[in-house]
Amino acid sequence: MNKRPKEKTLDWIGSSLDDLKSFPAEVNEAFGFELWLVQIGKTPKSAQTLKGKGLSGVTELKKRFDGKTYRSVYIAKLASKVYVLHCFQKKSKSGIKTPKADIELIKTRLKVAVQDSKGVKKR
Image (cartoon, rainbow, N blue to C red; front, side):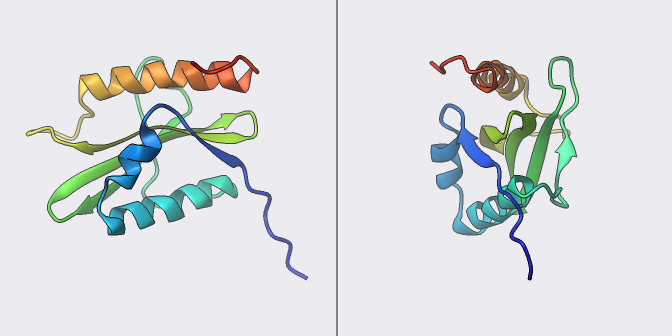
């Protein structure tokens, strides 16, 4: 008999759920499936570690659709949850680097996730 894998709970920080819902249906469904894979302990193909100071353990999912790039950023290494930190459409005109404003928002929301994982109430 096959056992269903134990799923971690998804916890949406800030406006990340509303932002994801605003994406085109195809992107929304793709990220939904990939986040479910993370919940059951698997690593999606599009997952990449986000690099930078203060971003340890943070992972980014990327999808291209209709000439645009969408990203969903999460951390799965805290407590028994997957914290979705930020979902956004990348609008940078050049390069593949994540814009600084998005990095700062991710860092701020990561602090909220860390506090929540320690049992401290979110704001």
